Amino acid sequence: MRIASLFSGGKDSVFAVYKAVQAGYEVVCLITIKSKRTDSYMFHIPNIELAKLQAETLEIPIIYMNSSGVKEKELEDLKKAIKRAKEKYNIQGIVSGALASNYQAERVKKICDELSLRSINPLWGIDEEQYLKDLIKAKFNAIITGIAADGLNKGWLGRKIDTNCIADLKKLHEKNKIHIAAEGGEYETFVLDCPMFKSKIKIKDSSIIMENECTGQYTIKAAELVRK
Image 1 (spheres, rainbow, N blue to C red):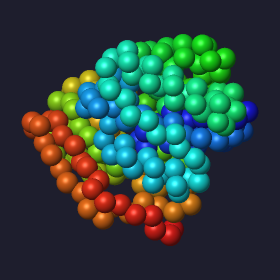
Image 2: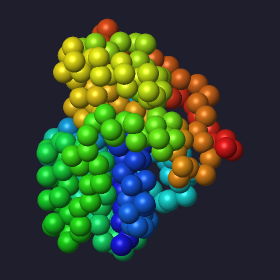
Image 3: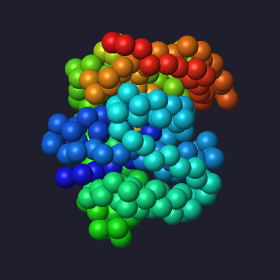
């Protein structure tokens, strides 16, 4: 089945592509929406422009659209992008990286139903700790690029998700009840390398901006593809 991926460049969307390919789907294009709002209800924001670089190393074409970020207008923009993917690439389904967010999953499914497409959620309902362990086992190099939860601080920005990171996230879950896989937006990520990437992404320049002690962003200002 030919499918498109809702793609942000974060761990969930990239791992969803990985799992879809493993399941035998043919991912023929990526769909990336850049919202003007930093607190978008639907879309991942940090370093979204670099999804184009990930598409290049994945060797998959990308449909990149801007959105006003108005709550329900975002869905109209998403529907336009998915419709374009259907017309241009003859897709039969959409894969997304939703883990447990009914808000996102239900709205994507509604759009898919309206366009006679199948909605595919390979990560839905997965155990959050096991999911992060699976990322590491699959040799994903994902770093934290945004934080917005009590207990997180500047030191988390730019940090790689590894076994030590998981252990620290579990401690924060016990203390502050955060979702350790960040389905609630506690943190955002960016994937620098994974088995599907033909080249890995090297960060050349970055900056950190903190809004308060537990909210901030790690912005990748310059990056390039390098041979593995």
